[in-house]
Image (cartoon, rainbow, N blue to C red):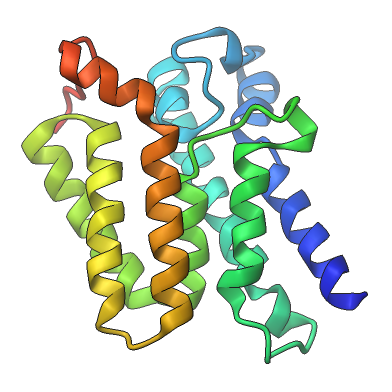
Length: 194
């Protein structure tokens, strides 16, 4: 029963719609009605600017980190943090507080890795910005970083880590299928600041 409660709490943490809250509270805007309609950091950057984008991205990362830390905080150290953190990713993607239409799982996935494998998280950030510099596509950089994370995780020798990272990478790619189509059609927006 306690594990079930932690799972529900992790899902609810992930369900906190950072983009919706920042947009409405700070700007009087529902970002679901602008840009891609997505609640994640990328659409917030494009719709509301750098300050709001950074705030939403940080919040989405940290809710994943907090969710992954729940087994430790509640004394269930035999439960792998990633297995609980995954429910925050589900909450972020299908949030109960925002009509089950959320983000694309990138930042919150990174957040659970920040807690479980901080070195991997740091290298993923570096790889993401390298891909972003080379491609100018946030979506493609996110997917390529997910693939990198799978390869990197193998060197940890942690079967659960590699399994969860692999599932998350596939999920991120699935969530970006519309972006993949736009990249092929050369209609996907590129970043201009890097």
